[in-house]
Amino acid sequence: MGSLEMEKKIVGWAARDASGVLSPYTYSLRETGPEDVHLKVMCCGVCHTDIHQIKNDLGMSKYPMVPGHEVVGEVIEVGSGVTKFRAGDVIGVGCIVGCCGNCRPCNADIEQYCNKKIWSYNDVYTDGNPTQGGFATAMVVHQKFVVKIPDGMAPEQAAPLLCAGVTVYSPLNHFGLKKSGLRGAILGLGGVGHMGVKIAKAMGHHITVISSSNKKRDEALDHLGADEYVVSSDADKMQEIADSLDYIIDTIPVFHPLEPYLSLLKVDGKLILMGVINTPLQFVSPMVMLGRKSITGSFIGSMKETEEMLEFCKDKDLSSTIEVVKMDYINTAMERLEKNDVRYRFVVDVAGSKLDE
Image 1 (cartoon, helix red, strand yellow):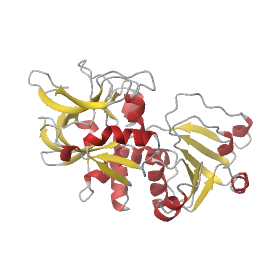
Image 2 (cartoon, one colour):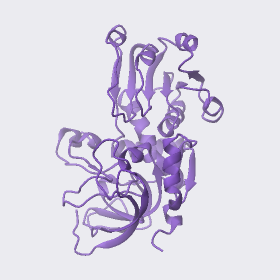
Image 3 (cartoon, helix red, strand yellow):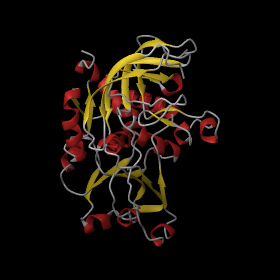
Image 4 (cartoon, one colour):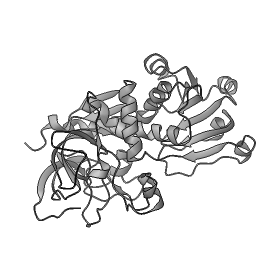
């Protein structure tokens, strides 16, 4: 993984404690090893998971912590063993930067399920040094966990695809739900949910957005192209679409009942959980048994799926709906994200923030 004999001093914005407040922080990157890519960060998306991590919501946070796992940057140096990338390439780094390489998931190219995976931040490399994320001027990442951003795709548009995009693409791919003509629903219309609508519609699906209020009805139908919009408290409408869906992608990141949504699935339908929730969810077993329905989960996507997803989005001209901000706005952005006061995704213009000046 390289050495620390020739350290690279860089600047990032880090949380120091569970308050989650981010401020400038200077630290060192390792020397670029034979399999490493050194990138200058251009921009980085802001994910709801970043809030969980900086505020220690999951009880596993280590400080100081530089968050950010939707990273797009320009290659400025590659190791001697790197063959896919060269200086000047625009590349992406997602949620993980390491794995064991030998277990069943790794051998099956689903390294995101490796028990020894290394997170892009709030984790430790095999050499014992902490990982730090993309809210910083630069990163050094093993070439396996780097993807080429397709030519013509704007960096700020590509950034959220590295988490939000692949997170919804992966289960549709794995569970055989890419074929056209399916009826699906997106539960929760946030950063991941809105990409779910776009990607599923591009696959030829009939998509219903289910939300707790009418707040995003016009956005879902007129801007994102959803076919239907249902408020979950509308019992008549929920009954009307009962037993009609092949799948539901559940992106809600807080506790919620599952029974109302299980009733919407056809026989063999799938409820796919994606929201990170630290409170146990509950359901009664007949809701699953009497329709041979499945409650399952899916976690980001593999590097192979990330590459496929980026090409799919390029071919279909898909991008995330974003609000670009500078790094000095990041604490306000985090507060707004926590209150759901953002259209869909913040992207930090890291290069334009001139952190090293």
